[in-house]
Length: 81
Image (tube, rainbow, N blue to C red):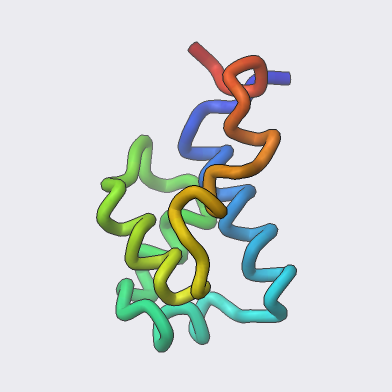
């Protein structure tokens, strides 16, 4: 089933937090992205997200943007048009 992009981003962020055994609070400390923004991302409250914010989250996760988007979640067949 195809997902809206914001849901794919939310699922990917949740996966990465679990892989690293991190809490959203720890990500806030590491990335500087406000806790409310992280919470809104995880809860799909935003219809879209600035790439700059995703980049800052990646810095907190210590990964590249390419690592973030390197997931089947972002394959075109899995995203809503």
